[in-house]
Image 1 (cartoon, rainbow, N blue to C red):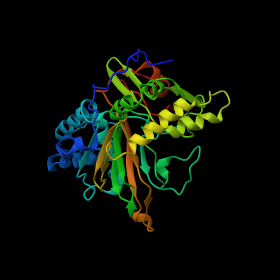
Image 2: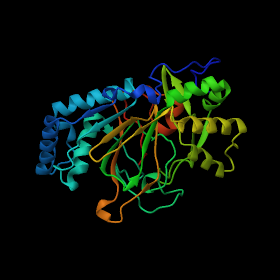
Image 3: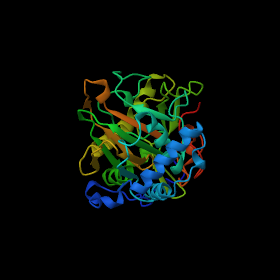
Image 4: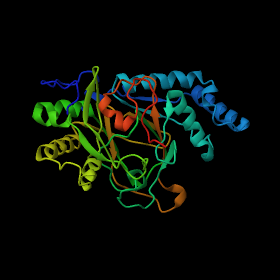
Length: 339
């Protein structure tokens, strides 16, 4: 079964910029800085929530400068390059215990935070927990290299609180660019990626759902492109006997994605410093990071805060993505983990 928009002749993606590394020299398109006025608004908002001991009323807060900034970023994520780095988060003026409140305030301005695990956590610390690769352990809790992937939400927001001693180099790539490059190499590979694949549902997901879900890697719907990618999850689904075996054509398509994403022509290396927030649109961006060496002292270890967001300016998704996003309507609250 193929996506309804595939037809017989696949065309290059033009709904979003299919950028390559050399296209990103103008960092004004993908980077900005917190202004002092925005910081002041955020500090007042954190104090207000703490004073009233009511952390649920995020949407009642008035932060017009932050609102304008995040609306502009949301538009860039949806209509332009699909990623944005916001620098200068006030780590020095916000107590560590209040960082989560501050990030959630920004998240609620941009959209709706969604659950990242079956416990319903909407904000998570990305730290090395000493885990090894396994069915339950997440790459976010290990220091080994990650593979290129997308998260199960419209937008991922990552705040760097402390960086590693070395390594943890962030890289991103335009999935539309990968699609178009594959099309030039072999159209049959692209056709393959529009077909359905079985993906293993991971241990942090809702265990009342099936052990796997079935979606394509590429979809196009009502003129909008979306790509979901995490090769490991597709390969892990092979452990179930009822799941069809991967064909050589499918494996060749996966290999081609891996080769292109690891080509410096296509990916952008983004330094990630304390106080940076990285936003990525998971429908048109793959992201990863390299392995890292951490500090020995617990108080110096690498620490990121992560939000998964559903955003009101999101595009419609193919109905084929319903098993992952649970809703495919544009602007609807969707994605995350069912609790």
